[in-house]
Image 1 (cartoon, one colour):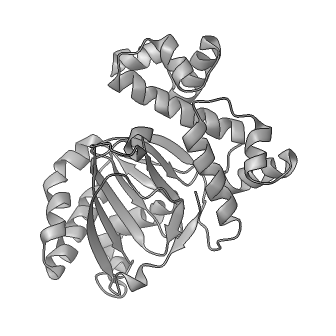
Image 2: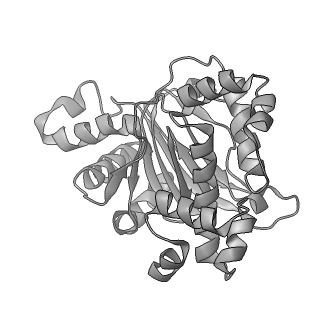
Length: 285
């Protein structure tokens, strides 16, 4: 998947843009842009990549992404199957820091919003409690007039900024200011997303990147802040967590469906990523 710098000036030419996506599947491109982005999923499932964070997403997913932070929402494989009838519903709000005017968030009454916008350089995910509370506002902002959209977004940002129902996503500052190597990492991430359920060796993925294994390891760590093995394990485990919740497959079968050959190793990796065993995770849900 190509890491792309998206220039939204040609689409927006304004400080705030609100779009609604009702499409078969989400944009499968690893990208970043100069605007803040608040994205609300109302109908869709898959894996979310924000900086070095890898996580499952589902309806109710609400995330704030800061400028130049690479991100990607990639649907589950069935969404990309020709003839599939499921679809995606998403509200996307892109805005500049000064969408209310120059220096607006420098005023003391907006200190919490300013603090949250600063934190968004790592990506911020909000929980179901606050996303449910703001559901009508998030849905209604699309049909609002331009002045109403600014007022509604300010209200949404304020409620998010005072909510404790949120977590930081990326563990480090992964903001990008250049597209160097974007084609290569794009190809690698797409290969992993499409083939995680099969055996993937370091040599296989290095060949995809047209690099030696040593060079690839350094490159991948620089671009994702994770080793290839750790990244692949997270993709597999996040997909396993989805299957454990949405399907009735036995744990042993889920192990093989996401690419593991050993149930013991699967349980070990699952606990490292999710903090509990697959069986306990299913029980907790």
